[in-house]
Length: 102
Image (cartoon, rainbow, N blue to C red):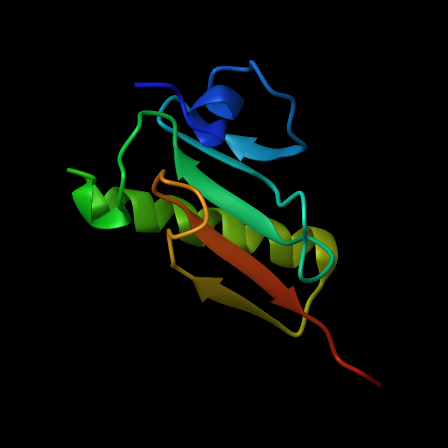
């Protein structure tokens, strides 16, 4: 099976604007952002769906850590979490900052 784009990013074969990473997960800016700071959080190991991760709770704790990083860096009014998984066949969570329109 050919590696998907997120597997290639996780292995460093394709560059990405990394926000955060550890040994199991990676967070990077979306290449087609819905807002400033729109970030994807992926497991480095390939899983097709978020629900397939054996450490599902650990993954979402890391997603929360990345949300806090985004809040400190971008100061959004809120951060939306969006789980779809249809655009790339690799488990991922979108974190989309929202800003006041004042």
